[in-house]
Amino acid sequence: MLATYGSLLVILAASCLVGQALFALCGGREWSWLAPAVGLAVLSAVAWGTVRLPGEGLASVIAVAVLAAGSLFFLRGRLATLGPRASIGIVVALAATVAASAPFLVEDRFGILGTGLNPDMSQHLFAADRLAQGAGGRLLDQGYPLGPHALVVAVSEATGASLVHAFGGLMLAIGVIAALAALALLERLAAWRQVLGALLVAFPYLAASYLIQGAFKETMEALFVLGFAIGLHQLAHRVLTAEAGYRAGSSQTLAAIPLAALAAGAAYSYSFAGLLWPLGAAGLWALGELALAARRDSPVAPLALARRAAPATAAAVAALAIAVAPEVGRMIEFASFETFDPAGPGLGNLFNPISPLEALGIWPSGDFRLDPGDGAMPEAGFYLGEALGLAALAYGLAWWLRRGERAVPAALAAAAILFAYAHFAGTPYQEAKAIVIASPLAMLIAARALLSAEPLIQLGGLRGAIARRRGGLTGPLVRHQHQLRLGLAVAFLGAAAASSALALANGPVGPASYSPVLTELRPALDRSSTLVLAPQHMLESEHGRDYLVWELRGGRVCVEAAGTASPSRRPPHGASHVITEGSAELPPYAGLRLARRAEPYVLWRSQPARRGRGTCPLISVGGRAEPGAEPGSD
Image 1 (cartoon, rainbow, N blue to C red):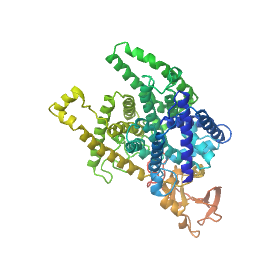
Image 2: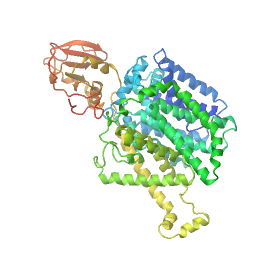
Image 3: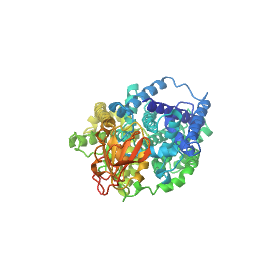
Image 4: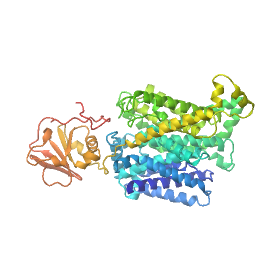
C-alpha cells in the first residue's frame, strides 16, 4: 500500500511542478488544472529519453528529479496564490484516489491489476524489467511506445517500490490527473458539482473498465486527449480573444506549447496513433472556426483569424516536431505491430466487438465485454441506459454549441471519425480502444451541461416571450426545461456513476510481486506438459492460476496447490517438468531431478524424460482473453 501510494505522490507532485513551470514559461501566472496532465506528458518523454543511458534507470531518476527541482525553483514568484482553488483540488484528488483504489480496497490487497481479465500487464512488467536492467526485448525491438514504462522504472528506482506497485501508482495518478483536468471547465459550479463532475469525467464506465485491467496506455491516451481538448477550449478564449491572464507579445506565441506537450506525451505513450486524436481535434476545430468566420463576418475574416493564430500554431507545431523527432523511427517500426493487422489477433481480450454506446457512460455490467442481457441486468436495461446516454449527450452538445464552445465537441467528432476508421478498416481491438479514448470527452460534454445552472434556452427578452407562447411541443419544452433538465441530470448522472462504480468494484488484483523468471524459463520447456506448484493463498485470493499460465504461454501448463505434492508418487498429468517456488532441496515428486534454480522458482525435470504431451491444456501464445480458461486448442 505504501509503495503504491508513494509512487502516486511522486508522479503527481513531479507532474504538477513540471507542468505548471511550462505554463509559467509560456506566460501563465495563474495555476492551471491542466498542469499535472502536461507535466505527466513531459515526464514520460524525458524518462524514455534517458532510461536507456548507463546506470539501469538511474539516469531517468536524475533527469526527472532535476526537472522537478528546477521547475520548483523557476516557479518562485511566478505563480499566483491558489487560495480557495487549492481546497477543491485537494478534495477532488482525494476522491479520485479513493475511486481509482476501488479494486485494491475491494480485494483488500495491492498487486497486479487485471490478472484474469487482461494479461497484458505481464508483458509491460517484463518490458519495464528489461529497461531497468539495461536490456532489450520484443516490445523495445518492435517500436512499442515505452514512455510510461520508462517513467515507472524511474519511480521504482527513486522510491524503492517494486515495478508492480510503481505501475499501480501510475494508474492511480492517471485517474487523479484526469479529475483535476476536468476542473478547468467545472470551476464555476458549486463545489459538490465540481467533485461529482470531475469524478465522472475521470472515470466514465469504459475508462474505469480499462483501469481495472491494468490497461494504462488507453487511459493515459484518453487523459492527454481530454487535456488537449480542454486546453484547445481555453486557447480559443485566452489567445484568439486576447483574454487577460496572458501578457501580450511572446506569451501569445507560446500559448499553445502546453498543447504540443500533451500531443508529444500521446506519442510517447501511444506511438504515432496517439497523435491522431489531438491533431484531428485541432484540425476539425480550426476548419469549423474558419468556416464560421467566413459565414458570420466576411470572406476575408478567416484570413485575419488565421493570421492571429499563426504564431501560436507555428510555435506549437515546431515544438511538437522537435519533441517527437527522436521517436519517428520507432513509430515507423510500430506501424507493423500485430494488433494493427486486420488478419491478426483482432479481438485481443474481447469476446466480441463492443458497442460504441458504451462511451456514453451507462453499461450496467461489471465486465464491459459482455453483450446486453448476458449479465444480471436484463437486456432492456442496457438499451434504456443507451437511450439515456444519447439524450444526455444530445443535450450537452446543444448546450455547448449554443454557447459557442466548439473545441471539445470538435475533439469528440475527431474521436468518432477515428472510431469509424477502426471499425471499417481496423480490428475490433483497435475499435474498442477508440471508444475508450472518446468516453471522457462524451462524459465532459454531457456532465458539464447537466450540472450547470445555465439553461439551454434563455427565456429573457422578446425571443423568450415568443418561445413561452409558442404552441405545439416547443412551448411546453421551453417552459418546463428546468424540470426536464433536472430529471435528465439525476437519471443520467446517477446511472453513469453506478456503472462506473460497478466496473471499479469488479477489478481483479493479482500477485503483489513480479519476477520475469517464469517467462525466461519458457525456452527450457518443450511441448510436453508442465506442472506448476503454487502457494494455496496465491491460487485462492491472488488470481494466481491466470497469472502463471500466461507467464508460461506457448506450452502445456497445469497449476496445482503446493500442498498436493507427494514425494512418493510420480508427477500427475503426465508432466515432464515441475516448477516449484522457494528454495526446495528435495523434489516434490518421485522421479524428478533438479534442472535449474531461478529464484524464486526451481525447475525440475522427469528422469528418465517422459514421452508424449501429457494431459495439461495448451496455453496459446495469442490466447489473450481469459488466459486461465480451460483449455487451449492444439
